[in-house]
Length: 191
Image (cartoon, rainbow, N blue to C red; front, side, top):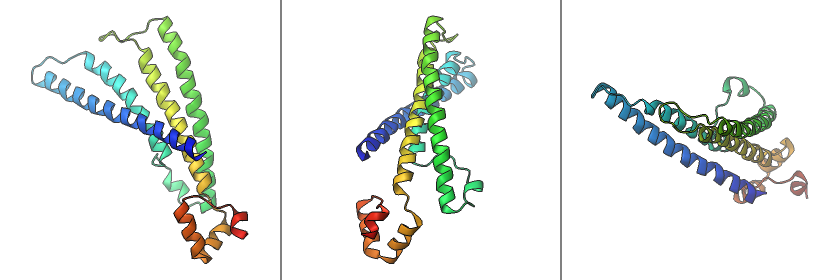
């Protein structure tokens, strides 16, 4: 299972690179449009539509943030929970997030067919809308993958209170756990 999680995290990282490229191009388009508007008095009307597309593409980076545990947390609420309740809350919201983003991504993938059938296109640039729908669907699906990685990481790193106490009393076991990077089962600790 560890290899699958590494592959999923690699996919999220690839989407993060796409996100960074999209944000960089978006920045250049915005600067270009500002210069054209205020220096030359001739704004480019297609830049706004390209900016919408690039902003949608930049959302593909959400999956990496979720997988790495850097997504927005409700600290004012969860920081006051006991550790076990905090983990349970994070797991519950992670599972709901997986379902929401997977379903939303799937629905957007289905909407592509409608966009192709009705030949929806952007007004100024004439570019079809279905690639933007596809990018947004991929953003939601990558976020669902990131949530799977996050939930798996939280579940495998959890140590029951009894195991935490045993590890505190036995520095050799704590060192072994730190060296291997894997959570020990309570039965293995007791044997």
